[in-house]
Image (cartoon, rainbow, N blue to C red; front, side, top):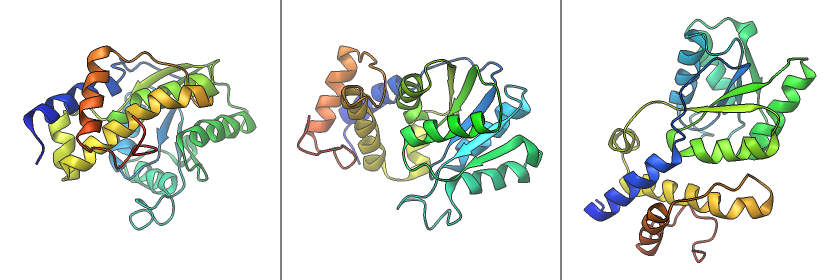
Length: 219
């Protein structure tokens, strides 16, 4: 269990991590691989609503997905899309990316090699990774418009789906830390973080929600 204050702080950060974009038709829908098949389902939902004529799933495996998705995250996502009736020719796979930067760079190269013209990307991720994925794409693919999307759900619903409140808060803290650190490394654009969100982050960090930060000693 986590304290009431920690829960409130985590909800604030959860909301900040989402871009709150309204989905609109784009050149391609890109589903970022992870442990969460909900990303694949949401990508398919948007495709079936006419929001993109083409889907690209991107992602290799990680220690957290290797057992669940042994053929690779993008491959399992594609299989899910085909099960749901998406025509095979409308789903491309990028199976090698192991981080968000590689997701974007490898997808961009894949589409260029396929001769697909892209001026906008419907970027589908887990809810708490929307802002990080957006900032990364704006840095590495600056000429396209980016519309962020994720499975609509509350923080409480997501915690219930994972079954480990502390782990979820750790992930929120880690994602926010990267938003602060990675622009200086050239990995993403700078995105201002409001003072209340920074204060919530600092409280959670000080309470030990640090298993997903880059360096647990780094604020």
